[in-house]
Length: 367
Image 1: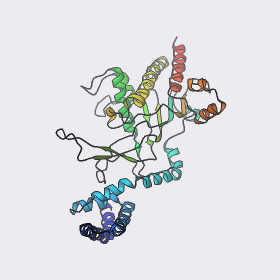
Image 2: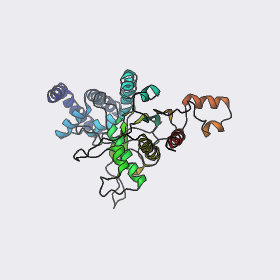
Image 3: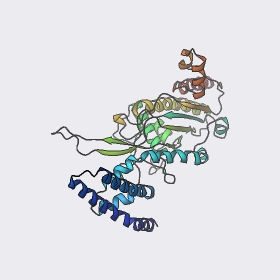
Image 4: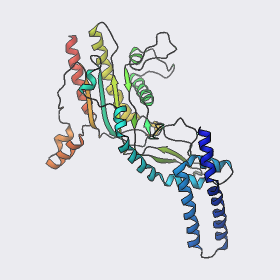
């Protein structure tokens, strides 16, 4: 079916591909004449750009790969597509409004009603974050106009962080905190297996306690990496990497469901230990290590400007209103105070404070 779609789309635009070659030949001839032909050149360039716009509206990857396969200059089409990314951002913005209801179903609202249906001592955290550095990832699809596309949701083509990416990055961070080596990578650490599970091939296979939800972004851009030649110390071939730009917002959601144990005191002990490492690992992943490809270069970290913070646990009562963070205490102006409250700005200390309260309550039960 894809083959028929590509064939039909391509056959409809063959005349336009041929027209581009004719226009480029005219443009080259005008430039050779060395006469004052600026207006004519601009008219020709505008016509070429109109055709490129048609290609970008239909399937830029298809036309780029076809033109390159035919030995034609396809780099101009790529440059035009990169320049038109603002239009793609507008489309994603419209998708956000259209599919908000769908996203609300995929990503649950974390509250007491949600957590009450889960086993005792299950907990969930959720917050809205803003990227401090661009987010980069590798998409599964190979047929694309760039060699380095960002991972997207398959139906609506929205950039996303999949649950498996969250799980892999948090697992790596936990290993880092616990000082576990990479060799062998598969560890027999009981807490690591409890949180993330182990290989299905093992006879004693078990699923982890953590459940991750996807994060969707409504913005897209391109990062440029220009490797330098060691001899000339100059870059000659820039590499374009599709990315989610900084300042883009996303929602992180994590749910913990404890393992079933007959001894409830053992469950509380496990929850206390797991909660402590999870809070530390989420903080380190978000602000220090990152959750993006090329995270060693600083990609994929967030700003400490969290909003819509939710932290709920089944079986322990917590105060509805947490203590005012330091940011609020320092504010003197009523206007400043109101602006911060409207943003629900807590920072990660909100989760750290709630985790301390929960751990204290769990310790009381076991005393």
